[in-house]
Length: 121
Image (tube, rainbow, N blue to C red; front, side):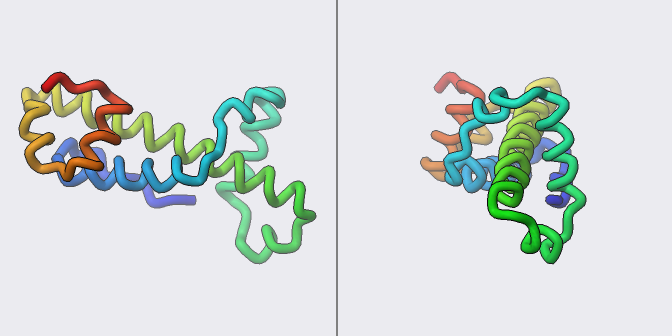
């Protein structure tokens, strides 16, 4: 599906991940919708989303296509959130201060990061 993000905890990489996460969250997909079906069924749909070609996706019935796209978006949001949290954890372990990250962030991106991982000022 998407290219794997770099795992280097450089502020630039963290910002890029946060921006990607912000775009996915702007889609307004409720992750709670995944809980309305069994986990194995959701996993199967999300795995199919990762493998399906755009041509085959276009041929599917509307409900199936929407389910696959929603599962892909929910799964992408989960993995991007995990990647941001992992990078922040690595950055903290390496002794990088959140202040340095804050100085390099625009105000909007910093607020987005603060929603994911609360940072003391």
